[in-house]
Length: 239
Image 1 (cartoon, helix red, strand yellow):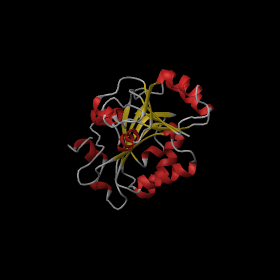
Image 2: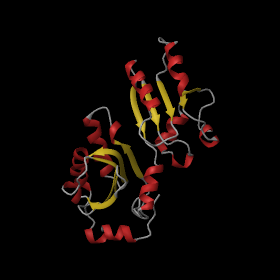
Image 3: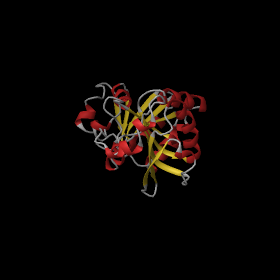
């Protein structure tokens, strides 16, 4: 059984393709606030819809008829709230596996405010977002996904990642992307800095980071053709 938590789902513009597809296929939907008309239009007509406060009692009354797939639309993009955390613990206790789809509102805002492009015309048209706290069920799946995304031309936005995991990811990404690839780093104190892929191996000092954005820069490109300075000084697309 699977429980999917979709964060930052108040605005249709900030839903990922994966989140929109998940909502469109949902047969059992949980919400924690009123959802917009645009998002509501994605929900199947015959799906069951409950408020988060009703979920526990609904499932407790049907222990032999639990839904195989629960989709939870959350309106915030902060850490998991106390209410959400309680539901997650309860669902894990009765056999559900957690999957989280992070929102992109915060990613767009931080990257845009610091003039750091997520998409670059004629280079990439998409970006991949993940929450490192809820990567994949196994290390093997996580590594396979990092290889797949790093070898593409998508920018990579990773939320809530510790320094050891970031350095591990950097070694994989370096196989496919140039050492001078620009990397935006946002710590939990609000500080934002720009490094290269090579520099994050030995220059970062914090244990945890709120957001890391790694731009596409394939190995065959010369570093001079795609430098940190070029990214920060250009008027490239940021969303």
